[in-house]
Length: 79
Image (cartoon, rainbow, N blue to C red; front, top):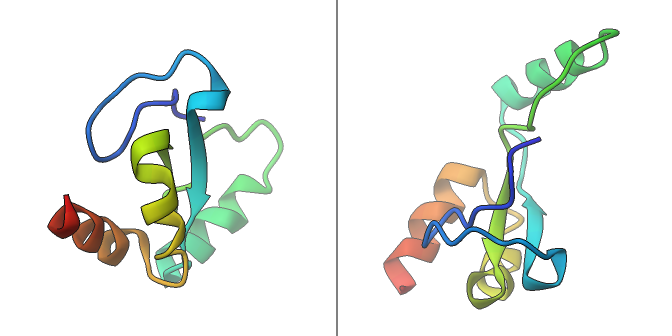
């Protein structure tokens, strides 16, 4: 799992009260990643999930129905 660093502003969060992990709509490549993640000993951060600081978390949640690349573009346009 990636450390909690905001995908928008790069703020590092030391406490989980200050951030949230958002899972976005899966792309075909994300479904393939999920299959690989089922293998014993597999370690990694889902490519369709991202950390957000409390300032950006609520906005990110509004775009869960989009893929991560689409969502990040929309969030960055608003900031």
